[in-house]
Length: 108
Image 1 (cartoon, one colour):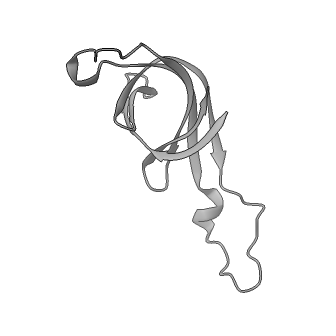
Image 2 (cartoon, rainbow, N blue to C red):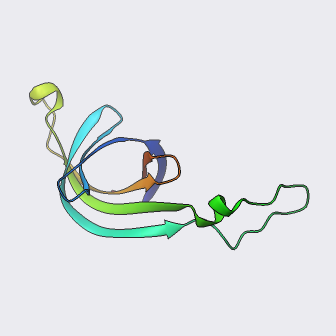
């Protein structure tokens, strides 16, 4: 699994899970949700000397993750010449503290 920290735009489906996402100028259509989980902030990491202590919000910060199987969508309403249909497994993260989506991993 390759690790990323790329911002993505996500459109949610009726069940509030990711339905489509835009990554690096390409539209990906989610075909299946493989897994879904929630991670909390690193509560076990205390402040070291010289650092300010963590706020209670940092300690309870959560992000929601989805591992999805997705295929490349049609770009601009039509298929590009020579653009093969591709599929992949992606990890998408939604950070509740700032409302931001990120692509955090991709299985090649």
